[in-house]
Amino acid sequence: MNKTKIFYKKMKFNKPVMIVGLPGIGNVGSMVCEHIKNEIGAKKFATLYSPHFPHQAIMLKNGMLRLVNNRFYYAKNAVKHGKEKHDLIILLGDIQAMTPEGQYDINEKIVRFFKHLGGHEIYTIAGYNSAKGKAENQKVFGLTTDKKMIETLKRHGIIFGEAQGTIFGASGLIVAFGKKHMIPSACIMGETEMLDVDADAAKRVLEVLQGVLGISISMENIDHLIKATRKMMRDIEEMVKESEGGAMPAPNPENFTYIR
Image 1: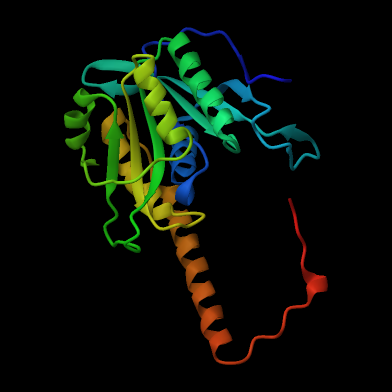
Image 2 (image 1 turned 120 degrees about the horizontal axis):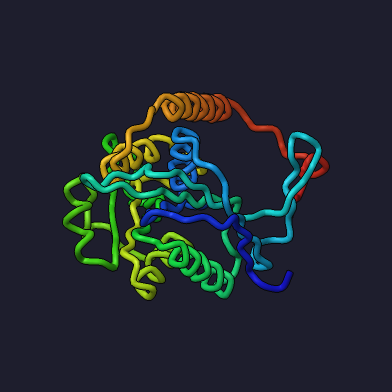
């Protein structure tokens, strides 16, 4: 396989809205979209493979393995904008492209594919590191290339004009390519620290996204994840305090393992 390819089941969609949650800062996008997929019972209909992904295969619990990929799921009439209903498409994945060339190739193909399906709107979901430390009431920031979307999203508590810097990867590029292909698109970002998992930020985005998409979902599973994450952080803090009380043993080079 020398090109990025999307294998899909041919289906008809009703003015679909797509939300994108790929791995990134705080894993916010992945958690948000995975949670919505599970709560509404979205079903897979397409898979994207690319030579721009790393040379990896994922081991499965049943003893099988598969190539790393991105996956598209759908739920019929899941989005409500006033009296109008739209199908929802959710994009999830194991990883993003590792090179600038790969990012441009894959993300424009994603937008082209969505346009082929009759795409109506795109929302990429991400984390935003404000460099201010963990806030008690984490904010949700927005960026868009469509001025009409700003006022609509502001009404749901999304803040525009405060986020600064650059967006790396799919969250920014998909929105930019959305403009090129005339699909209204926005990036919704949960305020977070540079953490592997920030379930608190994911919940804040979920709360906002419910209003944006006109859906109602349970927060029970994300609340369990928040409790588990907080316990893990407390355990780490206790380990650090204990290590400060005495000399740490010198590391043994024979115990080190390097995985590429």
